[in-house]
Length: 342
Image (tube, rainbow, N blue to C red; front, side):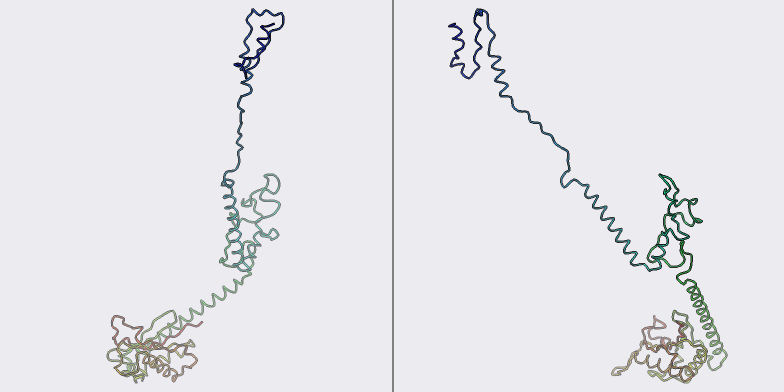
C-alpha cells in the first residue's frame, strides 16, 4: 500500500504531467507496468493541434464585371446609330418615295413581294419557302434580293409594287421632248442666220474687204456674232464711241439677220490695252461701255425692239481676242449674242 500511495502522489518534477494510473488492489506489483508517458503525450498532443483553415475561392466577375459590358454597350450604340440613320433617311426623303418603301412591305398590295402566311417558313416549323426563291414568288420574279436599295436621292417613278405613274413621268417625258425640239429648232435658226449673213456679206462688194471681220461662235449662252477691228478697219473713231459709216452698214446687216428671230440679245464692248493719256478722266472701261451702248442704239434704229436687249456691258481689255498681244487691233470689237430661250 505504501508503494501504491507513493505512485499516486505526483512529484514536483512531474507537475503538469498526467498522474500515473494506480495499480489495483491485489495486483502483482513485481510485474512491469505499462508506462503512462505515451498516453500523457497523446493527450497533450490532442489539445495543441492547430486548426485546419479551408479557404474556398468562389469564381465571380473580375474588376468592373469583366469586359462583357463593353460588347453590350457597343451593340446598343450600333443599334441606336442604325435607328438614327433610319429616321434621318425617312425624314430627308420625299413623301412619294416613303410611300414606295411602305408599299414594298405592304402585304395587301397586288404586287407585294412578301405574302404573309405562306413564305419565309410561316407555314410551320421550318416549313414554307424562302421569299427569294423564284418558285415561291407570288408574282413573276423581278428581283432576287431581299429588298431593293431605296435612297433619299433615288429617282421617282413607277416601282415594283406600284407600276402606275404617280410622279408625272409621262408629263416629264413630254416636257423633255418639247425642250429637245425647242433646242433643235434654235440650232437650226442659228445655222440659218449664220448662213444667210455670211452669204449676204460675201455677195456685197461693199463688204468685200471686211466680210472676214464678222465671225460666229457657238457658246453656252447662244450664238455670238463678233465684229472685229483690224489694222486698216475700225468700227469707231480713235478713242470715241461714234460708229464709222462702213461699220454702220455692218451693224445694219446684223440687225436685218437677227430681226427674223425673237431671241433676246446681249451687246458687249471690248477694247485693246492701250491706255488713255495722262490727265484724261476716261478709261477703257467707260469707252467699252459707251461703244456697246452706241451699237445697241444703232440696232434699235433698225427695227430691233428695246425689249429684246437683255444685257449691255463693257469689259475693257479683260477678254482679249489675242491674249498674247494685248495691243492687237483685233482686241477692239463688238459682240452681239443671240441668247438661248429659257
